[in-house]
Amino acid sequence: QVQLVESGGGLVQAGGSLRLSCATSGTIISIRAMGWYRQAPGEQRELVATIDSGGSTKYLDSVKGRFTISRDYAKNTVYLQMNSLKPEDTSVYYCNADVRSKDFIGFRNYWGQGAQVTVSS
Image 1 (cartoon, one colour):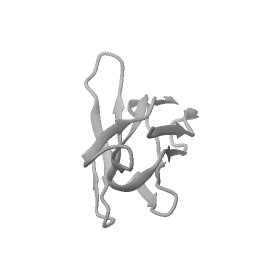
Image 2: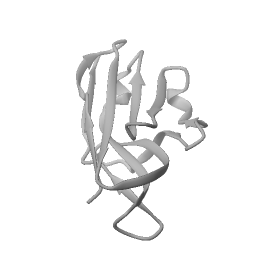
Image 3: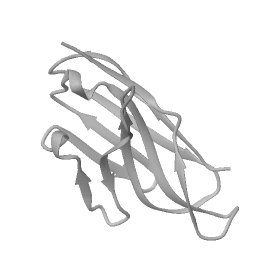
């Protein structure tokens, strides 16, 4: 069974940094895009950053220049380095991946359980 597990969230002061990690497990054959989303209370979930199998990245405009997504293809792990954090970055951050496994045909989309990031002013 495929699982995504986030780590690295926490409380940080404005201007600080955090690094999120998302590790995968299960009988994975390949992963297409991996990404990070976030959802604040009462808000819709929004895309923060994605990275595809070729390394191309996309970012939410408000995090460009501050956040960096990266991927370890050998470990099927994705990271989100967050610098110059602002209070408005406070949210639950979710990892997402399109996974092909030995357990099923084609690709399926998976979510992690979420990691709380709180930025104090």
